Length: 131
View 1 (cartoon, helix red, strand yellow):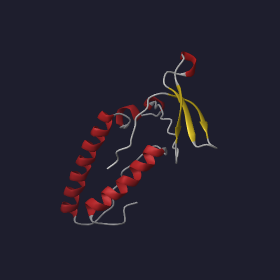
View 2: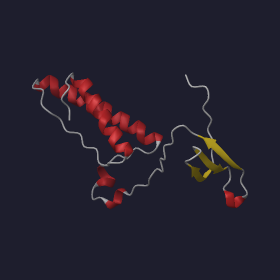
View 3: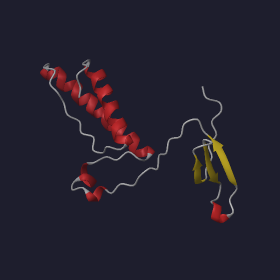
């Protein structure tokens, strides 16, 4: 259980690496916001991203991004369908054949999803050779 988590919404004005502090303002320095320094032990800079599915032919029709909560729930729903399909396929074929799931995107989210899918597919198949 974590009791000492505080959410602070603001604008990062700078990072003081030597003193391990993030310097931020609550409204933005230009708007007269209050400047604060937040100490850190480890700092992760996650800038987020914007995607344009239209840039890749077919992506807007077939790809499933997962940036919003609703998209994540949809991904969970579809993965349940994949689990059911693969379970039925294994029962019918009983051959232990390999299945393919493609994750497009080499950013943090795409790599994390790919690794979690390996664990999920290994667990659902009882195998340890999903690649």
